[in-house]
Image (cartoon, rainbow, N blue to C red; front, side, top):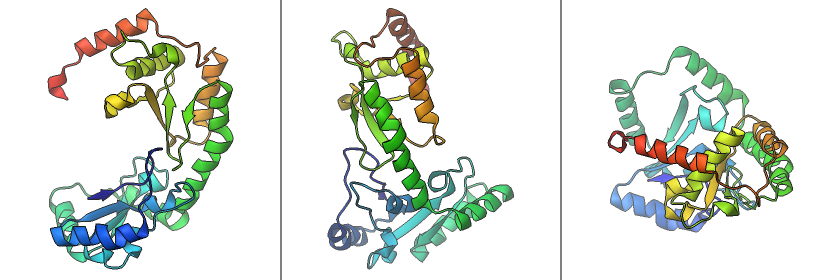
Length: 252
């Protein structure tokens, strides 16, 4: 069972009592391994943080906690990190790594060791929150763009322009994302990929280099984007239709 950080704007943080008296015993009695990234303890959610899973009594009996350089320390591609927790589980992972997985190359190990010794994940989280409050949200407001403010500081949900909400558009979220990409060269994730409930929303993940999202939003505004007036074009709709027809779903 994987505990994720509360990045989704509609998510929540588990209470200590729930983890202590329900989650850990549940995993123990059913032979379930409880896995979490250390990043969950560096992410704020309405001012509340989830404690590292290994700080809970008896968590060592069922839990493993991982730190991944790419996520926590902003070094994508390093493909290195570390784990702590239940010895039996870690030995199993070590055996798997020795027989099935490529060994992490030396340069990545050196980079990871340096990063882990010099950078604190919680500082990265604070920088993201500061950029969100000071640079990203104000730009959305200036464009009249409704945003579901993230309480976790990583992901945010953005409403698609109202003129995309038409009965004859099967996937308004995907069409809006295609339009943004083709017209402004700015990529946003269509929430329709997560299910029908997301067909009127886009998702923005705040993991780019500092300042890049602000630059992209300024570019859109400078080229005339306005949320209320943005509308789909026949050219974008035809492009999307042709791409979907060309896609071989049997290879997904």
